[in-house]
Amino acid sequence: MKKLILMSFMAVCCLMTANAQKTVVSQTNQKVYDEVEQMPEYPGGMPAMIEFLQTNINYPEDAVKQKVEGRVMVQFVVETDGSVSDVHVAKQVFPSLDAEAIRVVQAMPKWMPGREKGRVVRVKYNLPIVFRM
Image (cartoon, rainbow, N blue to C red):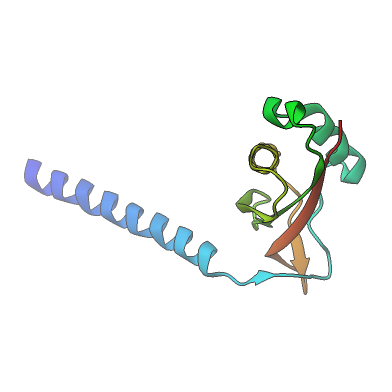
């Protein structure tokens, strides 16, 4: 009897694991749109995003010492649940500025996801982050 209960428990665990893996695979296999009917939006809109960036960006010391300024273009995907993934620099300026731009985008709260034909979809988003002293 103990063996039957143990085997049943293991079977349930295996099924739950397989189902979880299927969910992750289906999300990563979904098409990533460049443009959709309703683009993703930062919670509170553009003014809230600007405030978030101003509050959370820390100008790197080495860039300050070398008086480096510029606009880092960060590209990322807004997932169907609003989370941000695949964050990378599309246009580099200076290594520490690039790294800071990635850090602050990864720290963003969940967005309102994009929609296409009434469906929530994954959307590629480009965000310029300007560093000025």
